[in-house]
Image (cartoon, rainbow, N blue to C red; front, top):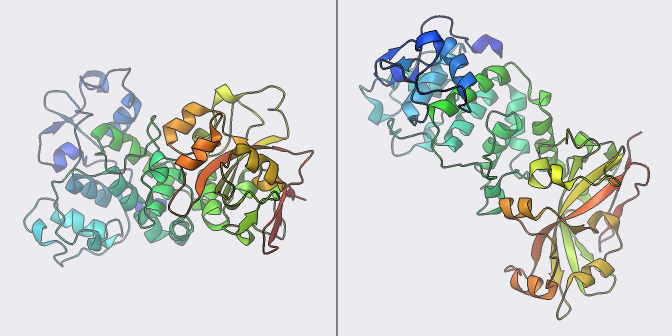
Length: 409
């Protein structure tokens, strides 16, 4: 895809210039007065400026915290691309008539970045752009020129997305794939508080880092990104197991058992399995998986458990209590199939940050009573260790559907 991405040697297209401000070159020694060495995006800003993506202002500042508008970002994408797109003479948005960005926005539409159906009331060019819009525009642009990125958008419609919004209030299927592909390719990442910030407004500093990432991503295939491969496998197979670990389900599949009833042997209740996430914890200095921040960090290191051949599984289930005063003991004693047998996710700080439920440490009867949903179930995550040398987990649901975990041959 390099053929359609310009490094813009010459002809600066700084967002300051786009919005008709008075951009000038960077300040003395190539820096900006308001971008100090300790600024989180200092290197990205200076790199983006040196490549002509941005210019500073006449007072020697960059204004890293200034927000971007839809028109500014659309124009940047249109000029970044070398895709051979015919100039559109059709008036796509009536409210762009005579606007400085009209030609660039129309070209961004032709190149697949922007879908006019998303803006039925007009483009509203001066509206600050959101992070979700950036995610959708960029991933749509990738998909327009590479069928595998288009397939990635299809594969991730129902995947687990490692951000707080996935759990509360939830990310609709119409938005999920764009967020997933943007995160899977590292075009965008979550904030330190665990959120993605779908409706947050992007700043010039953020745009500097995003554009540099896009420059790199556009030269690669969708399959080059481990995180995106995990997200795609979870979206299609309800697990990332074969992407991140030496384990496999062989001829079976988690799809064979997902959302099917498994009744506890003590008849105290039942459960349904939804997702089975594996994290490579063999080396705690380099924990692998895009899902790792959602469940684990360096504080979870346990010398006797974290060693060669040990992985951790995080399993999403819904428990349907039947017995009165149902508690954690009913689950622990009622589940004999290893795939859905687990303990609470121990890192309470991470659990709180992302906002999902896990098994309680105390007052379990009250926990299950208080968290029943409208279907009389409690959806939560449990943790389980997978040992390369002792694997043999399996699950057989009430209708005799079956899946097992084994080592890849």
